[in-house]
Amino acid sequence: MTGFPWHAFAPNLAWAAAAALAVMLVTFAVAVRVGLHRVVDVAWGIGFAAVAVVTFAASAGHGDLTRRLLVTALTAVWGLRLAVHIARRGRGHGEDPRYEEMLAKAPGNRDAYALRKVYLLQGALVWLVSLPVQAAQYVSGPPSALAWAGTALWAVGLGFEAVGDAQLARFKADPATKGQIMDRGLWAWTRHPNYFGDFCVWWGLFLLACDAPAAAAVSVVSPLVMSLLLIRGSGKRLLERHMADRPGYAGYRARTSGFFPLPPRRR
Image (cartoon, rainbow, N blue to C red; front, top):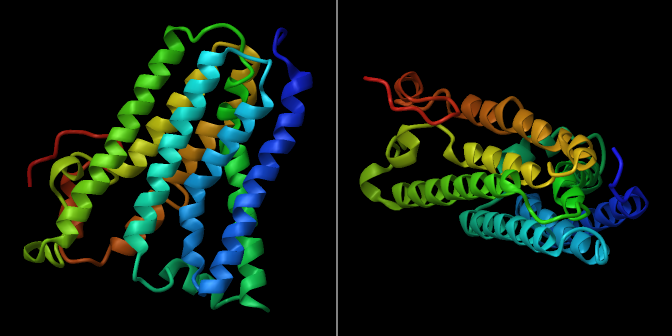
């Protein structure tokens, strides 16, 4: 693992942690003021964008400029699109049932409990998951074919997220489909096009760091953790548990792939 500027990358880890923490603390202050902790979901994407921008500034004089600009832009586009989408989706709604249920069990002050269990934890996850974004910006040499393949995989992921979110929003807004299970478009091929999209985005960003073995080794934990969260953690598993009793969901589950897109099975 030679050739990687560890002396410059090590301080960047602290700068990235500070950026993620700052986003979460500002979001916490906003949440307390408006009385809704669901705003932390908006901060998830913003946190990654902040880490990418801070790393771009900190990595000046290191790494390849094309790669630095590319990984910063890809991360910011993904993060800000996600933040805008979640903000629009939650407009006019009350507290998220997940947070309401969790805060009902708070042993003391609800806000202090939320700070520890939600905001600081998400800040730590932003820092951990963003390791490829940080490491890639210190890799020397122009992007290889592997890095451009990662960019293409990122584009596939963003497409699945954006198209899937738009299809679901239109479905929910149509009075004719009220109370029905969304099983059209990308949702006919996978029960979770948005989570599959996230999966592609983070494996794609990881490939941008793989031109340097040291950067790949230090950041491979990121897509692995994200994959675990999406498939076994707070993503797919939690949502499907919430949807299990909805009329028609059992049939939808039987004919539709659980994660990776596949042609729908016959009814």
